[in-house]
Image (cartoon, rainbow, N blue to C red; front, side):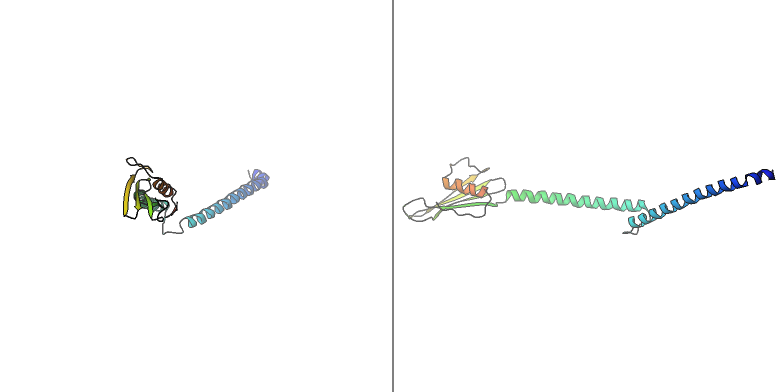
Length: 171
């Protein structure tokens, strides 16, 4: 038996060395991978005092719920502001004119005041030597239903619809 061991000793030593080299290489590879995982773990947990991933995920879930609540509140406020913006008057058109071509100046006017849905009113004033008359007409979607519009009122509405700031146009 001792003779067999002596005959195969160099081969056994070679196989043992080869297995040891493979195991050493594998061990080094695993150590490098563990080192990389530790580095990534430190970067991942760098911002907080969290010991494990579960605590981190739970805290992130709570933060997301709070942020979702804030977003919903902002969405509601945005809708309210949008509704107010459509109801408020912010389109204005002004046309000054002379209803009597040969007499007087451009002291008469038509004003169109509209909201975001193009609803509102026109105010027209006719200035004469005897006095001044003021008329108003309701506007729905840029048009009137009850009273016909004068050319000046139509032009004032057109100016208001073009969203230009206070514009005066002489005829």
